[in-house]
Length: 231
Ligand code: ADP
Ligand code: MG
Image (cartoon, rainbow, N blue to C red; front, side, top):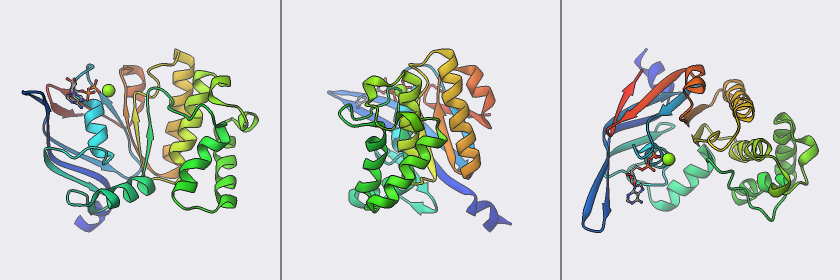
């Protein structure tokens, strides 16, 4: 039984504390945080601005090393991995979505979804098929050749979702991905992402200020004064 439970852990953050050194000042952001994310779970991360949501997502996404504590992703302890191995693990297991789409503005929607796959060494034919399939699922079949400037905010975020899924990750880290969208587009982007997370049986941590969206997710992590209330 314990083995079964262990296998369902996609991400385990253990005793995470984080301190930024800013000039002579020490800014303590996270204080002994423990989070366990199961396979297939969609979790909201909420809390006022400046409480450390992005810091926590950056640590979970192996972009930043915590001052104390450990990150275990897909059964692998990442604490002592070299930067090179972290980059490989990040590329194959994690997809990021940000508040602004962060698409390359000189590339089309299709090319933006192709790029991370080619970087990871996938063949052009396979990457093309995956890009077309994903953009179709996201309702963007007629936008393949559009550059980001020609897309609406909601469409650009859907391309960003396709890009995040391009290398078939196990975990999506979404940092206020609906923060710049109107209510209808925000709901639409959330719905699509939620359905994809469930149908692909992957996991997602979704930072948001939107309590209505938070209620629709499986679980809520409330970040306050550097600590988590895991509801
Ligand atoms: P949130 O995403 O919840 O708004 P952040 O994780 O961005 O919060 O920031 C948490 C705190 O850490 C803030 O006080 C911020 O100023 C500080 N901070 C974030 N990044 C850095 C950094 N690179 N250096 C110093 N302080 C930082
Ligand atoms: Mg933030």
